[in-house]
Length: 233
Image (cartoon, rainbow, N blue to C red; front, side, top):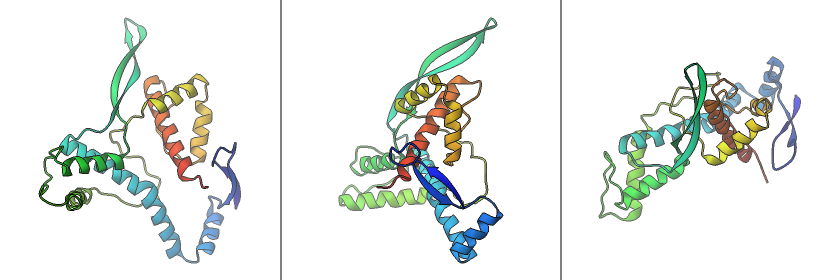
């Protein structure tokens, strides 16, 4: 077993936790503690379902609803910088773009409420306006269930590359934190912390400054969510 600090609360390092070594000997300890291979498989399934499949499922369902119905999420307008070369000189251009700034669950709740209340007409969704409010909401969630069943999600213990998909960029809060990190020259330190805590992130130490900023902001956001999930009272 090895001991490692895991971030929690506002502690400088977090709690010192004894955990399994990532080695054949570590696996033997896992198996001994679990009692059977079946129990190990159950633990892996449970972990991957919660931390991978359900996260991906919510994201893809929200994107499917947006694509199918054009029901608008909450957008933020953020400033982005792009570099281009003109007459042999590198120039930086500033522009603004809209980015998705709403958790998928809240977006879907708003969608269901708007359609149920007759505030939004969604192509492909039907509502009996004469039905009770609860019945309308249940009916819409059942229609979303049919859409969700078309999304392929698979538990795997393999290290697989992230699928290419449209990334929802962070809002100004996370971009501001990224800007501060870049200003302080702390990207390398941040990268080590994210890797230590098992955070998946896109590269943010490349030659593309605008993309670095967005990727770092997304990584900071993911790390803060991880810390909240792994912080206990």
